[in-house]
Length: 334
Image 1 (cartoon, helix red, strand yellow):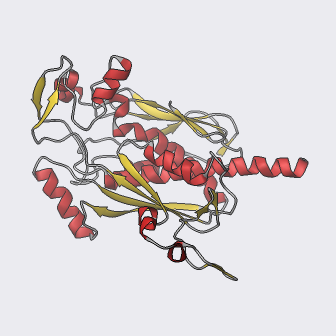
Image 2 (image 1 turned 45 degrees about the horizontal axis):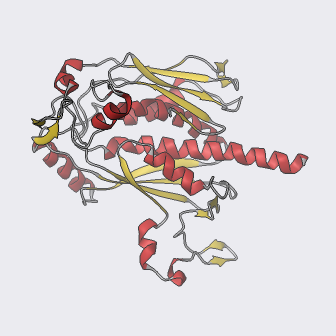
Image 3 (image 1 turned 120 degrees about the vertical axis):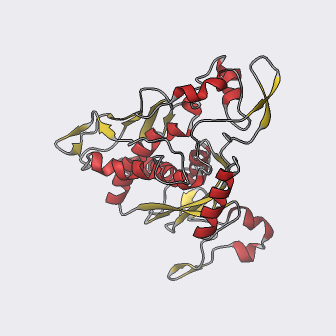
């Protein structure tokens, strides 16, 4: 499944070592001012090679808008955006042609399709997120016109929360040929009430699905998440006053519908599976072998996953806004 959304529909394409990656967005409203400078900043935050904490792969990730924009504004027709791969070193991955990386999708792709692109993981690579980040930047432009902003931050890496400690953990893992995971937080501000559709179109369910659709994410919390399991109802309920809610334990969503408060999301990000440290695995013939993964990989995915998570939350909210607009039109004309 390569298409996301009901109204603001995004289809991504491309592989880690293919000629290009990108997205086609259908359902974007017309009249939104748009050019490449609106998209590029989010891609720049996601791209590799920016510091010693990320993959050294050197990609400019320069976006080109191919369609759907006329005289600087969206036309309501499909918007195609493309980012060309420039720094591909496929030879680094030749040893992975017949061997599965532990913790990676190599094995499951092979089992499902009977073949796989071993070069950087193909479509299962984190580089696949280029298309969704480009689409998310467009969604953010639309949301900004409605007074909605989306932002993210690193909460912790390998248990450390201070910036110096986070950098220390990542560099230590890199030096040891290993990797570390962490937690990221994403917040949407200015979201109106009423977004989300019970029972199976709940806003928190859509957000959770969007976040879990990011390859490295293994857990999602909305609001206080798992912490609510240890509370009394009197502690956890967001009591209401004449000025609004006294707290926001629910993370801005009640009954699957936005409450008008900040929408608060946290994601658990696994350690990068491609590591130099020797591990046991199997090859395509079923033999147990040792593997030490070479090539260029992030020692920690958390720093670069922030714009990806922001993009996915923006896509959900843009889609929900358009859905809510359809509901209001039905109410008005019905």
